[in-house]
Amino acid sequence: GAGVSQSPSNKVTEKGKDVELRCDPISGHTALYWYRQSLGQGLEFLIYFQGNSAPDKSGLPSDRFSAERTGGSVSTLTIQRTQQEDSAVYLCASSLVAGGPVFETQYFGPGTRLLVL
Amino acid sequence: GNSVTQMEGPVTLSEEAFLTINCTYTATGYPSLFWYVQYPGEGLQLLLKATKADDKGSNKGFEATYRKETTSFHLEKGSVQVSDSAVYFCALISNFGNEKLTFGTGTRLTIIP
Image (cartoon, rainbow over all chains, first blue to last red; front, side, top):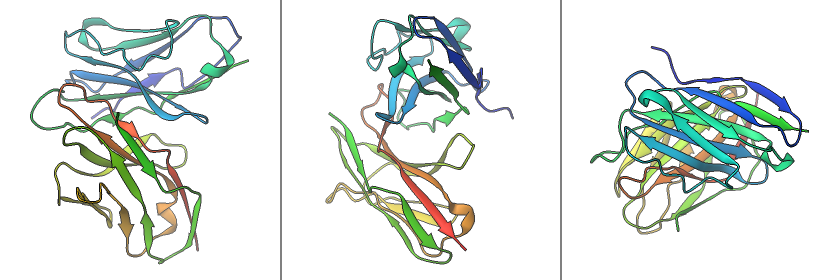
């Protein structure tokens, strides 16, 4: 079946502009995660959604970052007033369910490569 | 907090050589441990996992054993191939209900024919 998809695959923007990154999880997966992969920080967690529960935003680096998940499926990560240090690959992952007795495998999308000039 | 320390790269080996990539961790509770792989131009893929002490995860000839006493999860393969060239990430999840992956820095592996 279809995997996690993300769009756009590449995004170049100017400092100060807002950007939106989209993630389509695997159908039926209730948990969705955003991570960031950058040269200086490696792979780091940003935010996590599980069903209709309040998201875990503990990894968001600043209040310029926000994310929504509409209808329990598609998610959008928004970065306002982008800065050069936001340049990174933004990865989305989904899993069947979270919070149960067994850790479900997280399946990753191909990522969105963001470059802030 | 949780952390994963991974063998620094890059690592270059000849085909059919033995591979070890070291990984140690610090975590609260009883974490599950993972190795993810990122092939050139592709997304992260789960390579193998182990969910409790002494478990051995295995896939594609790779193995890793969850060693609680040494807090380690070293990745091994007896005979590497050129197609194994990729970046390998050790990771953990700790605490139910907060299932964010904590990753190591990654190890770039290059296999030469």
